[in-house]
Length: 211
Image 1: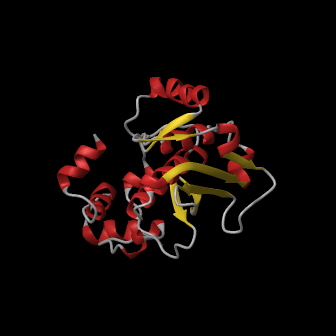
Image 2 (image 1 turned 135 degrees about the horizontal axis):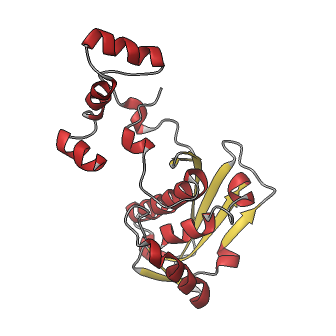
């Protein structure tokens, strides 16, 4: 079973849905990071987003379109000013352009550039989202992500998450595992969990993150 930190489970962000809001937001941010790593970010003049399956059918109600736009302009769901969200989205809708990643101005028309594919579903997961960047050299770059729940995303073609390779001192797949560790080690549940968290973070980082 994939190793999951408490900071993967308890997230700071904007709702209403971890699958339909947080996941697509993270996917948009990840797509921009990928474009930067591929050195194509500065060539982008248009981005089209395609929402599939459940993301299309309930996207408006769960703010999927808003989350995607916020991710594309480089906003972080952990730190963005919530009271300014409506204003920033309103500016994009009214002006017909956005600052991609907060730096690169591109034309953006929400009715045309966010496509709700109500009748199409990708085979891997019902929460599918694709991004297509149109480049100045005439080429296109597309990537597809799936929002699996809890704010977790996986990119199409990724066979295994990097966290699947994490080795915890107390791997837990069943409640009985946790109970056994407590008995064998003479520890409380929080102490077992804390020992696992030390694989990812220092003691200070764990305490600061919880606070």
